[in-house]
Image (cartoon, rainbow, N blue to C red; front, side, top):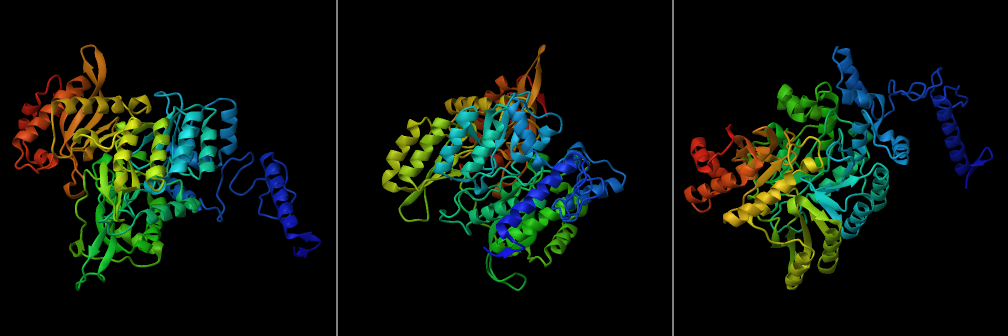
Length: 610
């Protein structure tokens, strides 16, 4: 090794670390700093921290400086930060490890604003629904190798409730995690290569892409590599965490299974451009859309910006940075990208993005883009041919997105035995197993059914989406997963549909199950029946996505769940009898139908008309 002043490079690095550690120890104990290196103030505190570790001004070199400056501007304007911003200002959410270990050792859950700060590592204390943690993972593009899938099942057995839920972000959640076990789940996930940094809280959530990326015979571009690249870009840029509020980003490559990119804050949709005088060179681009948040009744709107695949990550990063600097840090209800766009307009926002990016964005009239064909609404269920000769993928139906750990291990075995060992999660709360030889279809069907799952489903069950509900979420007003399965069973016995239908059940106004884009959307509420308050729903109809994009309209208010299944059945029967042609979708039918006519068809017992 090269030597200098009698010390090797290894020895010098050791001594530097030792001195820095000693300085930190002295600073937090209010002792004077004795080393000659580094910038320390006369109080003995490290820059950015007061004596005892209290957060003060962040030094220019710290990556969170941009957030501190945004907060400072709010305070300088005479406004007050919301409590979540104040919590982030006072304590770094990613520096809680020692506290988390101490709480786990004492069998304690976090208290106060630490409950919020724990979410940045993916741990949600979901009391009073359950006195336990929920752990949200971070799986870019929703693709999980079978060995990792099996390892997650082992963690759910050792430290959780023995099951996992697939979410509407093609992600996984583990539940019923005790206070001692949360930190073991995090370390276990890290050992498996699942990095949970920013899985919850005010961060960019799990990046989604087309679940059939790379195997889809009709896709325009593979989007899984883009989702993974952006995932790692964010993980390796600490300044892209701690946003004014959460942020959703999705890529859609134009394949058979939709990723619902237009429901995200930032959506990229693959399009084809045919060269003409007012368009860029012909080829495949990704069209940028901004501001989706369907819980607030807004789809992402096209911006006219077209990007080559390699341009997407830098542009996404610039968009996030503009939001960090200018998003609302005073009112959580107005702290999503939609509201900044409403305030500024798209032209000003895109101009700021260009300034952040240091280059102009490619613009083109919307008419020059050829939109991909509509996604196959059955494409995430059953067997479908891949672009690889002789290979297929199978969409496995999960009961309202839930599977036991035994089923997870069984699915991993199917993927390894008959496929390439790959599990692909979808935003439809189910999963795909790819690369299956056609000759193996019968055995795959039998293996899936042997573990208590299915590869086939009725129209109501195939399009069923449900959030966690009050069994695991303190905001939810009803047992959405239980009600979803009960409703599906009732409809299967009473009506036969020849068209796909999406029924979305969400537990509250946060709309995690995106009820506004369902053909039938149900938002949970408490309903007064006699002297009791029972679980019920507001009923919306006519929502849609993709080519049938639309926000559902409220038809009924406060329907007790016991009354709901026959109402939905009568609406579906009315649709089958009065649609304009056999191929008319329920969404189109509902939008053109008179509300009073639909109410009469529904029967409407014991409920209030919206």
